[in-house]
Image (cartoon, rainbow, N blue to C red; front, side):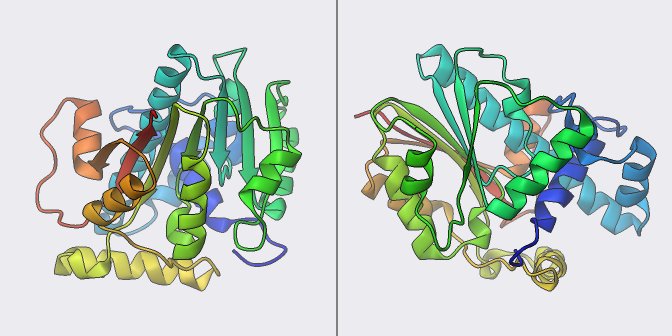
Length: 284
């Protein structure tokens, strides 16, 4: 993202999540605050999502379904952790995520970590939408590339000695590998059991020619707004890294299988390098 500016990809994700609430497509994830925080009407959302060629419309629909599925996967993971006794949730790179404002667990404390510029922008949008800040929410402004997560969370009175769930969606592809590894080490050092949900992109070399064309369009777009993709992993790469850091369980899903599982259908075939989302757990 550009210094002094909120994340534009965070806004694009919020628009996609909001349109999923009203689009004529199978509902995977329900978020009653998504349209309000997006700040535009359903008709405006529809214009943004459909005013293009059919191939682009289809690609946007697949992306929306993945964004919805990864959000549901994350919140299902949080619910499982809370049922097992965890009372801290950390949303890393929160963007316009609304979990903290819909949090169904009154005794669970939520920490939203994000770049200071994006976090201030979000607070303005929350105020404009009339969405109240719950007492269970704590903001932790952190620039991942020049500040430590440890310092930011310590200032927010996050408890390292108690279990936690970390949710890190739509972020690591924009970070350097060293920053990603440092963050993974921090999470791995949390009191157990600790769970981490995040998504990642495969290297372009693994894509089919059709996928490569689509990836190139998307990569060029995010780069043009100052938020280029920097880091990529394969499932084997990331699993090895996580296990070396002490995580003993890795549940990795690619986009077609994740979406199909929620819809009760057969996964879409032909994709060799779709986005992935995973839950890594360290229990000891």
